[in-house]
Length: 348
Image 1 (cartoon, rainbow, N blue to C red):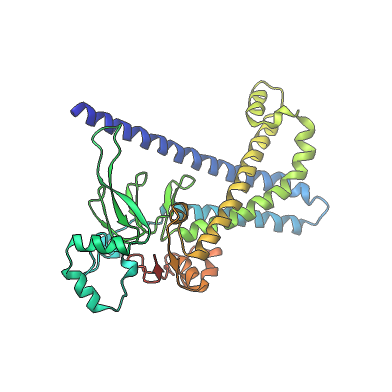
Image 2: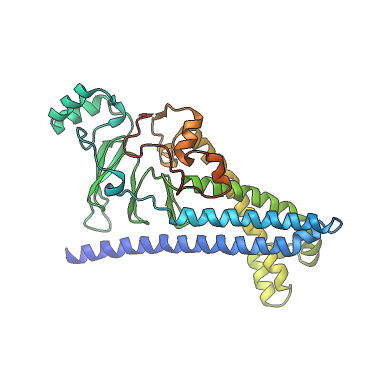
């Protein structure tokens, strides 16, 4: 038995190490790409593009490039370090009259008689009620596996209910999920972002969306300025196979092409990847904010409806004066206007 437990611990440790490596690798690629592309654009591409224009035009283009890099970097830091974890002392605990596994989205807030009757119901009565009026469900780990080959025992709960967290050893509110990488229950968890090495959730979704917006603008801006320089100064001095970045690195090490051209080829691959990733995810995030859903709820086809208007949905992510978040992070001034424990506007 001891050997099996040790094997299980080693297996979990290996999975955690793999994810940690992916986090660090993704963050390193992002920082390398950001610094490299910004430096390349400001020092080479922009002066080349605006060679026939005045110095003021070149200065403005460079200043805009610095602004884009700053917006991406500051929102990346906020994505990484703004705390999304569920803290009962700060965020509140399970309300009186609510039991574990009870679908709170189908309980009228003002119906005190119904709440009083729920207080007198046994857990078996609530389970019977939930079977008739459950909505979407999820499978919550209720017992940890004893071996590496076993799966954790799972129990069915209504999605919009308070559920137990074995890792944190306490109840967690609806839409709050435990992240094994961050080792914390995350309020309104959307997903774990490897580029930030942190979970996207209730408090930093604004930074993730703003980051994607400026990343999309920056990659389009960079591509438009890089293509002319790349065509006349890189492609003309390299072969077709050199455009494949592992080949370019190898041939640069052997002295067949210059290290600068190899560096530009690697940056171009990173730029194209960022362009596709940022624009694709931006479309997804805009649609999710419009619907009032998370990536988890979309991927698992959870049936829920946010009854608020679009302006209220925006304030639930960005707080008041939401447009200002696209200029400077304001999470410490205007918090999201929402109830991350009870979700009174959600019908599930």
